[in-house]
Length: 334
Ligand SMILES: [Zn+2]
Ligand SMILES: [Zn+2]
Image (cartoon, rainbow, N blue to C red; front, side):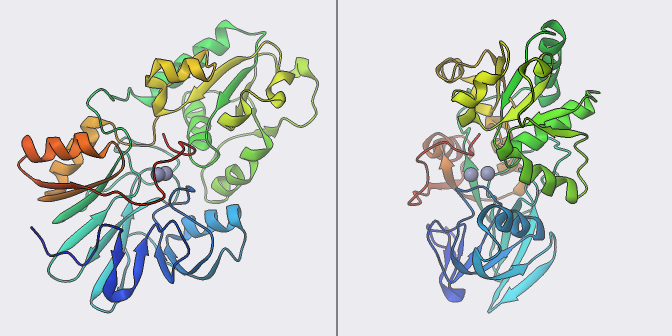
């Protein structure tokens, strides 16, 4: 068992810093811009330049008193602790945090995935002694198909239903841009329509050089104009009045949770697209193996199954973290 300088609340006592704290803190190291990681009101934030830009876009310029931009693979030292960020492959700017006191290397993954995603830097293996991993899809039943294959289903459905609009539920940060990029990479070149809530972050992505092609606002266009078109909207908009303006729409949703048929049915999803920005079970095991970590802390999801597997099948030290404020609500997860 390592004597770690990081506790189970992801707090580093000797430099008074937290990773992804849920309440305002003096010093917060933020892995990425999703609301269950990046919060408003810290005194000082350390994050990648992209994550800082995303936080400012979502919460306002003054959402923290001070920002320190730490680009990927650069190191800063505070007290005895070296801090560096490595790509997590989750959304634009997402990073794993490497903490090194000269004796122990601890990696906190934040949210991550192992597959390629053209809207952010791909995950990088960071060897460590202690791995703090998320486990959103930490059950053997979760096996994510290739995203390209899911996008083909969407394109097929658009071709098969030229009179219907396709309304895709996708979170505004990350998933929306990834779906658009996957469509572009599959050769879909028509304008793609955006719900108002999707615009700001799509523009931010484009400003960071991620070409999403022509994006139009839904605005107040005539119903008939949406026949055969693709519209990206937040999942919450799929069932509200807003969505009724589209003619006989095919409701789709892009999420790792779409593997669970009951969830798709509950949300009235006709076309479930299993597109996840998190590791599936095999990717979690792959990562544990790749990092060489002998101690695994599991957070953010299905902790118990992965902890059990690490102990009994892999012979590793493993513990669940029960971080307060996490786990309720699935907004932005999946
Ligand atoms: Zn996330
Ligand atoms: Zn998360």
